[in-house]
Length: 184
Image (cartoon, rainbow, N blue to C red; front, side, top):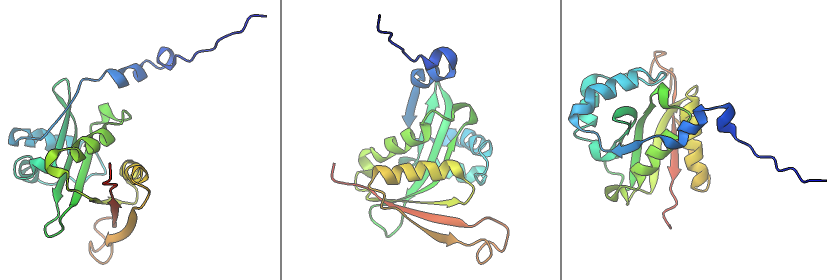
């Protein structure tokens, strides 16, 4: 009897998987000329809060060394905004993570976060902080993955309470603090 070799070619059944590995990604610091496109990207990514376009211009100019922009064939596909916390040496606060709906499910958010953390100017970062609302499942998955990759030592606390701070106008923001493994 002849042995039969079964192979799996998921790309033949689901051709969208093939494109996952063939994307032409570029990661870079944003520039002030990206501000308007960043604003549009964030607006297309509920439940993210849409801040003013002015805020996105500041992020892409004043804070561009702690933000990252992902492009695919010169189209903005994703953006992470962050800043070094004043008075907290080694702590990077990730403000927002936005991935265009057209580029979701490809691991782009995690790739952007890893590229940001590898920047020479951020090599002293030992802790990531972010805030996430209860129903932002994409952000929870992203930051839980980061925590797992760093020994699962992350801690979640309430940062801004829906009733106490937002007076019922915004969902509670939970602070997720993740120490990074720095011995690598």
